[in-house]
Image (cartoon, rainbow, N blue to C red):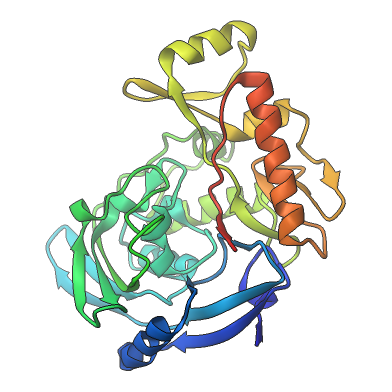
Length: 332
């Protein structure tokens, strides 16, 4: 048995029946054996988007720990970097910015590991990782084959990829990114634009943008080491333009983002309007500075998390007739 409390940022106290580390490609045979013999298996990266719903996981955990990064090709204006799945995401982003490479700087300071970034197609402040992935190297634990999944075959969509709900036999062990050498700051997101204007920032480098995003995130989001959380708990819902116009008649201040043929709503705004922001329900609650983030005030169980999540979904549906979808990985 292995206690997983320190391996998930929400801080759920859960015992795993079997716990196996993947440290390098030499471990393929070992994890294939675990896969074939286990009735239930979960691949765990940094645990920053994982919520265990039970106090025990009656299966096998494969903890991804391989590290390393290599520049595999370089052109005049771009560079391709192969990165091991166990690398810390925030550290990798900062390293790319220190080298003067751009393309990931708005994704700075996101907790977790590189291997999880394509699974969730992580995104923030006007960027998503899918736009920078060339391909993903996977090991099929069922067939023992290694192969690459090119970007077009990853099935990327908003907070989604082919690994989100299926292809669980594929262990992501490397990701290849294509980054730029010429920098064009992405200032489209309101929080970044406001920060730059208020601080009269003129010359922005990739590293400066990394620092800006890090400071903005730290000012709004709780540190998992201090207050357990799994980041944004719900996705921003997408609705038709017709439904949006109906809601806007009653709530003219609604926060939304226009897209082709649809409208994306701010889940945080919807949740806040339902009175959840800063509210505490025993050991869990929605954060006082960011209503989209559920936090663990200490001793929270998976049942506590699920109860609050269902309550939030129920009230948002009741008030706005909008269905929220959970973004975090809920593990039974």
